[in-house]
Amino acid sequence: MCMMIVDVEENDDVLVPPTNFSMVEDGIFRSGLPQPSNFGFLETLNLRSIIYLCPEAYPQENMDFVDAHDIKLFQFGIEGKTESSSTSIPNHTITGALKVLIDVRNHPVLIHCKRGKHRTGCLVGCFRKLQTWCLSSVFEEYQRFAGVKWRATDLRFIETFEVMCLRQCLYSIIYQYQGYGSNKRRLLYQEESIQKPKIKSI
Image (cartoon, rainbow, N blue to C red; front, side, top):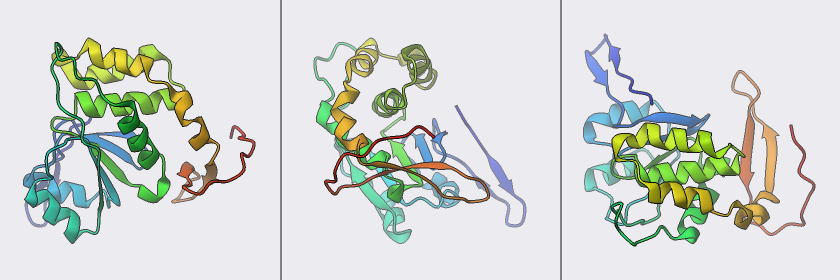
């Protein structure tokens, strides 16, 4: 979990990240719902996209910030729930969000829900499965951000989420190196239907 406060001495501004902010991967970030006091910090990320995981309309102040900085907003409305709730996260919603997440044309991208714990944790957990993380590491990361309010239902969802449903998408992933001072493996999801290539490990 990363909680950064950067003091900018020239104008005495303090850059404050959103609650539960952290880097997931190069070009992928996660957090709770950004407040206006966090906008200065978000500007330093040079975001291209935001993945918003709540069904409620995006707050107007946040919408103004997104519009002013030409940031694409992708909303995947997942209802908030409690441990005892029978409402489950739709698989197709997480699949759609993952397609946006692995497309480097959307990077840098910020994933967030309201508090950056449960819905964000489920999406990141499924992303980790796509990266072939072992479940114990996936669960440890989820619980680190959820804290004492972690939910067994979320862990069951992550465990049972079938990444094979994304294999057709993975056939369209291109591993490419783009340097910003160092070589980085980037993932590109292509919407176009193309013949299945052989995927090589790099």
